[in-house]
Image 1 (tube, one colour):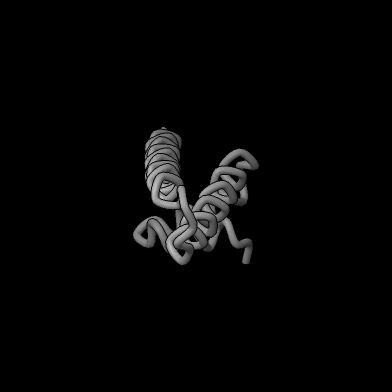
Image 2 (cartoon, rainbow, N blue to C red):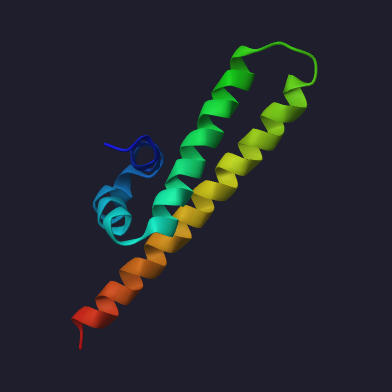
Length: 89
């Protein structure tokens, strides 16, 4: 499975089914998942490093990961709402 999709599922496991379905339908969603995976890897690299300036970079990457998680959650919830609307017609 795509590393971005796996990262999204690991981050938001309660939405696993929605993540898989959305990933099949939306290239922009897959890209967002990829961004989350990249940011998560960069954060883990910074956590393991004690180089000067890494504390600031850790904070930046943490914020980026949190923002991407929120964006993914918002996309999933919007998709679920649209799916419910389509199913009620």
